[in-house]
Image (cartoon, rainbow, N blue to C red):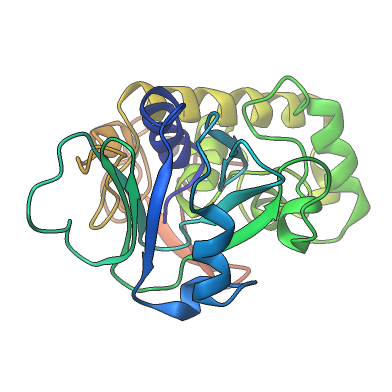
Length: 274
Ligand SMILES: [Zn+2]
């Protein structure tokens, strides 16, 4: 569920709080969340190292450390990375990994336990295929109408499937794909090769607009997303079509439809979107 704006919301908070703080100990309570090390190796690689910042690419959170290896995290459906300045006696709900810091505590929590953590080289390719093959970040200047049009021309898929393909553009998931295509007035099931250059420009502008709006509201929380402080985001009230099926389109009043595109629940206005 967390998409670019949610992960970026977490990154901004951790980017303020973590730099300079040293990891004193690591407690892995659910070993399978750590993908490329044993829990002991994971703790050994991180202990004694200090955070130097907080980065993000697409939906991945990259937490660099002052050594050869750093921490890469994907929250998947329900992951949370919560930093507490003055930790209380109890851990945040659903905590599976605890990082005790020189000051404060960082906890990885996950209701559905589908998230992933990896130890990766601080510099250069990570060796994690999903990360090393990411396309341009959806809010970066590198994501242009021209780049999107080229990706749309390369395949025969519905336009929404291309927006969800992280090698074409990184950071878009089901919510912002539907929201952006609604703003751009393009039907999610349109064959990708029929999208014009003008429409591709319009989709890119719409992606950046819905993500900027959500970032301003601290991300979207339906059920599980919590930011780096353990609080919910406020973007639900800004959504125009996602989870609004059956309700009137905010532009023309036609009921919003729900269909399936590439196996994903998809909301759109049958009148406004061509
Ligand atoms: Zn409409």
